[in-house]
Length: 280
Image 1: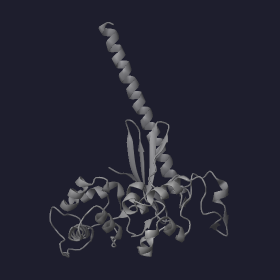
Image 2 (image 1 turned 60 degrees about the vertical axis):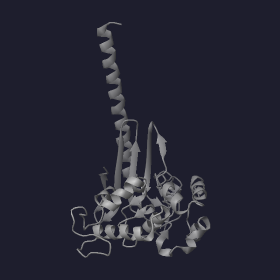
Image 3 (image 1 turned 180 degrees about the vertical axis):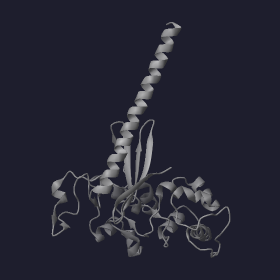
Image 4 (image 1 turned 90 degrees about the horizontal axis):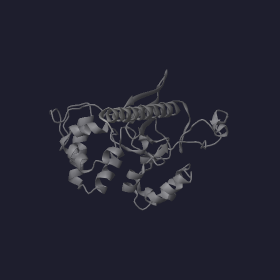
């Protein structure tokens, strides 16, 4: 093969690779728009986000839903779907550890499960609280007003916890924490949206059963059903878990060349249907 032919083949291969990347980017963007639209406009149930396809599941009587589950939901527990050479997931933030909450019950549970002593937990929680609150009052073992600990506002991203020395070290040791971390202010976690990675930490003896039930479209639709699946919940304060709720969702779409992570918030106030922004 001559030089000219070899050069032409290389250019053709580059063009084909560029076209493949563009096609994939279009698919990823289209899926991101589709999921954002569904989250912002369709019914949210214990099973996830409805696609708006099953009309019988969207019927109302006296302005109340006839059925608790539509039957066409996309799961919001971080379950990974694969479609047309791309993969996507939706995670309801109500199923994650709510670091912006004043009650850090689940964060303490996570720290304890990962071997942090009570004094270590107290220090991590104190510096986090001083970072998140809006005052200059110093908590015992906390820190205020230092360049290494800026803040005094609620976290806008879990990644910003790296600004706090103690939390930077924790994230370096347990990078999976970022996948378990959410920005909710409500302390209760949605049992139907807890992802596998977090459920296996909190309920290692029960999460397989929970995931099997979800795969069979058996969702927690009654309060007592949660305790049936996870008997240890009887020791957890009732206001620390729920079977529904959450208006903020993290959408992740990935391909071979392209990925998008988007945080979608619905029903933020009068005149607004949703907000959406990329997460970096």
